[in-house]
Length: 324
Ligand SMILES: C[S@@+](CC[C@H](N)C(=O)[O-])C[C@H]1O[C@@H](n2cnc3c(N)ncnc32)[C@H](O)[C@@H]1O
Image (cartoon, rainbow, N blue to C red; front, side, top):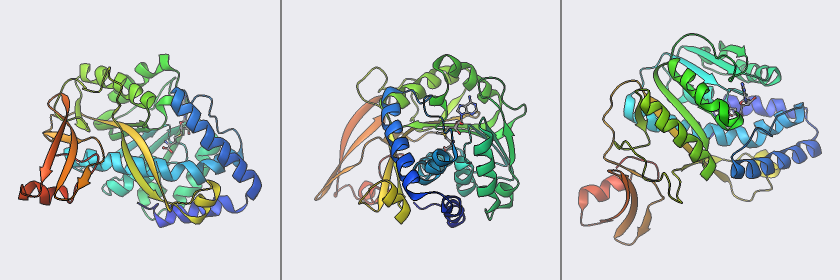
């Protein structure tokens, strides 16, 4: 996956004025913070407190959160279709999830963002001014605190991408219930694909199922999660191509980055879920493939052989994260 060309160019423009050495140092600090923060589950220590840290976020984190959000929304779309006209992004930062939402749901025509940091809102405004999509260019940027009051109204699609873990644990339940009240059709929450990110997601799962939500993705039709209470955690990966600058700032040799993420998409309508979901990279051998599936309330391994022609053909188009 690549960033939309207009977003890539707008980010290049933002980074142009930055001192290279300071940007490299800030990028390294941010990457390290994420590594430590996502391991401990608490990212509230990551405040993007100055221009260079915000620029570093654009350079080294935004491409990954964009890719994760596109992937999560695409899987949600498979379950619930694409008839969305309005979107609200909670904890919008530089507007990453909105670019992703417009890519997956081009039918969106009213876009609202809610973010605490006025400087990030300014950056988001400048980035979105470069978008081809008029709905994104005309985003309503609102400033406020997610734990105080989120905007009144209802949106077809509500997204909270990589922001839940920045809220104090005691404030998350109340926040997510409010986000659900604002949701007309679909609420998508995306968190880092770590044990702690998954634990955050699991808390929501029970809460929103009790409030009448249906899970659109990734869970196949089971009320309980088989990974809950186990040593395993449900997560997926999205691949994003690195620009030369991204490679330089992250001291990376590979031309791509794989972002691990956990997510849940909650629908207001009953949906027909796939029978199973592939929850690990398929292991491909000559003539057969091992799949790890989440199915009927348990994690099961299955083997697809070349002799099962239909399954074999289907598998060619599918991978980790897809319904089976
Ligand atoms: C890691 S960034 C994610 C930004 C964007 N959603 C993305 O996917 O790239 C988390 C964002 O949540 C915002 N945030 C954290 N706590 C908040 C709060 N209490 N109220 C509003 N925004 C908050 C931060 O300012 C930051 O912009």
